Length: 81
Length: 219
Image 1 (tube, rainbow over the protein chains, first blue to last red):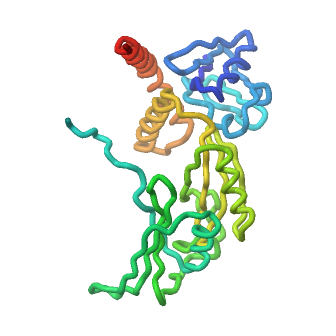
Image 2: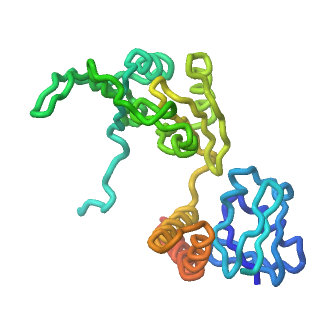
């Protein structure tokens, strides 16, 4: 399972929304964090989120048994470790 | 009534050496319009050879101050190379991000004030070098006549309580991974996820209880 956390602040709210467009992705919450999880890779398109670069590159709050395999101006990709 | 644990009240003064007092006064007093609020004219003293010096202060708002030392007859110590500032120089292989990591950021209330300081700098010999929209702040940057990086910044919104929790968990995870071998962002995010699972739900319940208590005490 690929799992990442994103803090619920106004700049980040589009990130779980865009991630959830993939039907394999489940989004729930632990406290003030969004938990984004998928049995396959999680791929989030930066432009679809509308996040400016400073927000985009500091959006990941945590990873459970997962690793970042892409994090650039185009996309964030998180996969099973 | 007992005093709180956290009692400090901001910056009294942050002090830097200068070899260019004329440029320094022009930059802080004449361009930025920071009032001169204090100075000391001191003869060198003590067992150690110490030059005569002027210690002078500018108000940076909120009663806080930036201060400079000018030492008569003291030349810049031989540094490592051609980049850096009046305090320290570096060889060209030292990356700029590292040199710029040490800087002073001065707060303004809103965009209008940020743009006013931008205007003052842009009309001077020290125009703004960068204007950057960060995560939750917007900043302008320039180097003062001493080569010190100066940032003027405004908040884009107030900090939320969950950001304080997130900062506390980040710092705890950082201490944990930096205490172990080969610290990395990957290790930090894995450790921070463990802390989120342990703490975040309880923190939110605590916030709700505190909010509920406030509700109950409201007249």
